[in-house]
Length: 124
Image (cartoon, rainbow, N blue to C red; front, side, top):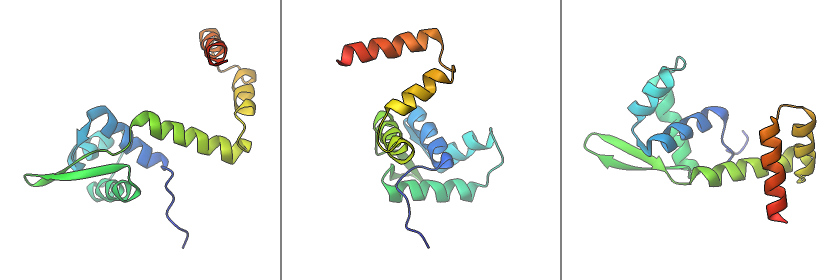
């Protein structure tokens, strides 16, 4: 059995996006939001939220008859960490091949390319 990863799975990230958007959420809130997009069991949502708590992404407090969850880490911090981990894993720690890939793939609009150029100029 492999050790649990601290990296978010696609399903965990989907839950985190719901919690970040709402700021606080119960399992029922998350379940309903997920169920509007796809079929999912309530117990699956609950289990995934418990895993996110174990990983340190969520924290909960008891209110009346339900736990209320909130993000333990800010969205920007989590995204930054995920991008850094991706760059390390795929591009051996260098962001340049990622940027080259994005520019050459032509999926960036002219406006996006101009914004990236501006950010690069400002960071120098």
